[in-house]
Image (cartoon, rainbow, N blue to C red; front, side):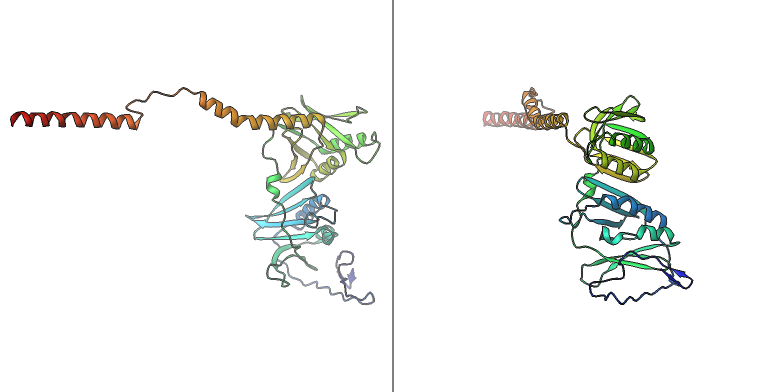
Amino acid sequence: MICGANTSYLADNEWIGDKTPLTLCDVRVSPSNSVKPNIGSLELADALNRVLPFTATDDARPVLQCVNFVAKEGKLTLVSADGFRLAVVHLPFEGEGQALINRDELRGIANALKRAKRARVSFEPSGESLDGISLIIDTELIRYKWVSVNGSYPDYEKLIPTEHNTIAHFDTVEAIKAVNSLKTLSDGKSFPIDLTIGDGKIVMANPDDKGQAELVADVDGQGKVRIDGQYLAQALRACGGMVDFKLTNAYSPTLFSSNGYQVVVMPQMTTKANEQAKADREAKQAEPKADREAKQAEPKAEPTQSTEPVAEAEAVTESETKPKRNRKRDKVAVA
């Protein structure tokens, strides 16, 4: 949108509401809007591009269709999830607030922020309800304002793996090429890929052994997991550059991380993964029983005066009562 010497960027249908006539449009351009930045516009644009692809598309899950903006403890966290994947990115930020913004309302904002020189993020009451919160992004020309969607976002922090048995550090560019080459061998849109990690490399292969590709990687530990090829490619593209891939086992969530950005991807279950999960559950259930049996089998220690309060008390009582009986007999003899 151009007005004289001023240029502004608006998303499609941003100025149209439910009651706006199609023949009327009121546009105001404010080139003198003073903005005191509190966040990098390019960093915020990159963060939005990294979380938007992982929001849910199912209308039955309105909360997961949103990007969760959380400001606290000196950082602004953007979170998105669709039930199978979770994306989290942190940016330095001073302030507090929380808002859920629908993915459709954020379309085009990343491109506009890339053209902006300054950006400021803030949270304020929406005015429509006592509990309503609005997210505001100010640039030199435009103020973007969205009312938060009502709902509670899942506790995403519990879904991020904190323990792992295998780590692989590798280049996403080479990995994406390998995924694309395996995709051409697939018969449909869904193309699972088996990742085998160990011996300084990652082997990507089709489950039906139609083809495989090897990547050089810095590896710590060994492991194998099956991931949906489309999910794998999206996670690699979102991370970019060098990435750390962390794996716990074949049935637990996997973690991709790069420079403070994290993507959690659920694996696809295989027969071996189900067997491993069942064996781990049975072993965990057997632990309390084994502990009880081991405790019952422990030999009981003999009570001693220094360790048993009861024995010590009996010894003290006996030493005090004997002299009293002797004194009593002496008095009777004198009489």
